[in-house]
Image 1: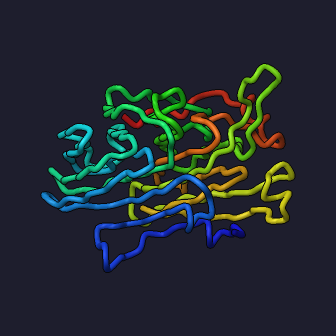
Image 2 (image 1 turned 45 degrees about the vertical axis):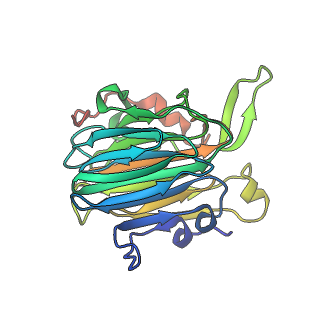
Amino acid sequence: MRYTAETMLVLPQHHAEDPNLILSITPESAGWDYISFQARRLGQGQSWSFDTGENEFAFVNLTGRYAVTSNRGAWTGIGGRKHVFEAAGHALYLPRHTQLTVTAEEAGEFAVTWVPTDEDHDPWLIKPEDVPSGIRGGDNVSRQINDLLPPGSPVHRLVLVEVYTPSGNWSSYPPHKHDVHIEDADGKLIEADLEEVYFYQIDKPEGYAYQRVYTDEHSPLHQAGRPIDGLMRATHNSAVLVPEGYHPVVSAPGYTTYYLNVLAGSAQSLANQDDPQYTWVKTTYTRVDERLPLY
């Protein structure tokens, strides 16, 4: 697959056969091996069912409140935030061979993702009060991070992160990449080979962010004669695919940008390397943006 700005930007669409589906990404449509992703909505009392098959699975509430029943357990009261900018999300992890039904106790939107696995792990409900949250960067590169399913979690491949970028600020900066699996002589992981989805929500409907995805000479795609250099305008409920390469983001002035990162690949890790042209910027920060944390 040749990746361009058009093929890496996934916009919400109406699906007549599945009107509650907002957006869908499959390994076939993305041209990669692991991540499937959907954003969905349900009216109060409506349900959606799924069988995880040979995949590990995660549910993240965006808005609304949900109950989940399954052959691996039942949970109620998942969610409750009116929008993603008021609190961290809930995340429910479910293993392979799980049959589940999500029912909306209150109408809203949610995201689900699944990746193939040959491992079995226990179901796990991650509550907002248990989600590590912090500030990264500085100056106009300050952003807030919620580690919903961080490296070291008792899962196989999935990593989930929520990121908030205030008006005019940059995030995923300095540009970093995770497209080659590299270990040092002692076996320490320097960089993992990861696929990544950025799923966006913006605090006002006309708002947007820009994301650039680009490769260098170390990228397998670059070496195969298929380099990437795309600039995408991300809007509410859109997604950007990051198959390889560096991928910085900037939030339009006047708007706060949220994105849910889903990652999976060669390790349950966020090991990455900066673009060496820009890593020096980290030495210049003098303060943290006073608008953070958002809550």
